[in-house]
Every structure is written in C-alpha cells, then in structure tokens.
Amino acid sequence: MRLKVAVQMDPIERINIRGDSTFALLLEAQRRNHEISYYTPDRLALRGARLFAAVQALHVRDKEGDHFSLGGPASVSLDEFDVVLLRQDPPFDLAYITTTYLLERLHPRTLVVNEPSAVRNAPEKMLVMEFPDLMPPTLITRDLAEIKAFRAEHGDIVMKPLYGKGGEAVFHLGREDLNFGSLYDLFTVTFREQWVVQKFLPAVKNGDKRIILVDGEFAGAVNRIPAPDDLRSNMVRGGTPMKTDLTDRERTICEVIGPPLRERGLLFAGIDVIDGYLTEINVTSPTGIRAVKNLGGPDIAVMIWDRIEAKRQ
Image (cartoon, rainbow, N blue to C red; front, top):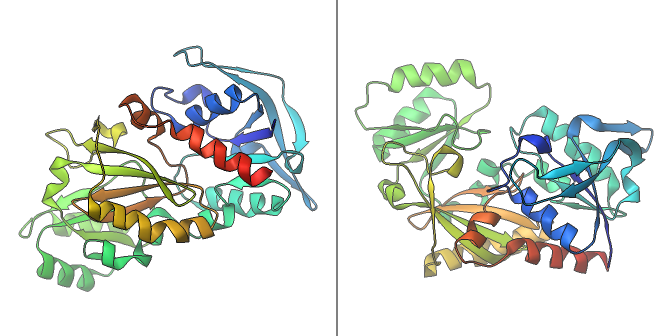
C-alpha cells in the first residue's frame, strides 16, 4: 500500500531530530515508500468547502544538520491525500484550535491523525480530569479562596498553566511558602484562563513516566528523571530518559483510558504517570518515540503506521 501523506508541523528546519517523534514517523513513512508532503499551519486556506495547503514534497534523512530536502510549493486540496498527520506542537491556543476546525472538514475522505475535533476537545490537562480516580488531588481554577482551601488540605502543591507545554511555568510551593501570594498575582496577570493546582508528589524525583498508547493500546514507555536542581522531568528541560517497565497500577491506567482514546480517534497518545498517578494525557503532538527505541524498546513508529494503513484499507 502506497499512501499520499501530508504532515502539518512546525518548521522542519528547527526540529531536533534526535528526539522528535514527528521525524520518526516521517522516516518510517518514507521507508514504506509513502509519498510525503509537508506544510506549516500558516499555509492552510479554506476556499468555500475545500481546504487547501501550500505543500512541498519532502524527503527526510536521519542525519543531523542535513535531515531534509523540500520540493517547490504547490497549492493542493488536502482531500487529495489519504492521510494528514496533525503534528504541530502546542501552545494550544486559538491558532491551534482554528486548524482543528479546518482539518475536520476532511473527514472521512482523508484520515487525520489525531482526529482534529477530538484534539480540540481534549487538551492535555482537561481530558485527564475525566479520570479523577487515577489522578492525584487536582483543582482547576483561578479563584484565590479555592486555591487557599486546597493548599490548606494538601500542603505542598504544584501550580502550572492549564495550556502550558514542555514544563513551562511549573512551580512547587511548600505549605508555608511565602512566594504563594506573588506567584498567584503573577499567574493572574499572565494567564487569562484557569490554571492547574495539584498535590505535590515527592516521588517525582524518581521519575515522571511517559507511556505511549497506539490506538488505545500500550506501546512503550520511558521514565524521565529530573535534573537534581529542577522539578520538571521533561527531556526538553534536561530530564534524563531511562529504560522502564510498567507496574500493575500503570497497566490498569492504560486499560481504563485506552478504549475512550480509541473511540475518539486519538490514535497516538502519550500519558504521564508519577508514582502511580495519572497527571496528563497528551494528544496534540505526543513525544517519546525515539527515546523508547533508543533505550531498546519497540519501534512505535512502525506500530502507528501499521494502524494507519489498516484504517485506510
């Protein structure tokens, strides 16, 4: 099977291919002889009922500093493609949301991965709230009295923006931390939406596990150990990837959330688990494929393309 594939992503010249999951997907698509075209979200254009993009033919190479070649741009209706990979990174803002409104017009002729309306309705820190029994105590608000009551009940807390990404603006506050008032004021003027307040899990020092699900099934995992001087374990923040296995609790988490993800068309998802507690479900542009493979785990890009091809038969 040879598919026509378009990838909507951030500028390809800026990616770090050593850890980029989109790049891993493109390498596997090329290995399978699929025809790949590339565009950035700003090149979309809705003309009446048809969605166009200024696409360029793409060839990729697993070579740092020389990882891609592009053909000349051409405006093409995206319904001519078999598959569109929705892979630009957050922020999950109105620009991102707008692309989901545009891309959902392609269904069912073109398969969009992940399904755009589901992506729009499942921001990472909101979708997870559908599974409160799997989570640490969590509050989403910007109300000072609510936060004070939560802090009085749970002591040490973490505060982070609801639509943040990559560990940006994640703060740990102790029970008597005198920075609380100033941080509350800073969040109030910086973020218009609510933010996440969560009970602090000290075991984060032992790792924040990224578990990848493909079409609702466990595919692989990597444990991310934060640097000694940082709360955040994100690899873009200096977290160290380590080989890992799933605990019984983590397998239960996958079994519970897998079917709802599959039903929504969220074929590629990455969940974050700390000390047996689910903290996020990432569906906008999940990462971790290359880290899992580099540590001797399965090639998840192969699994994803196997599922995509099965859906296009």
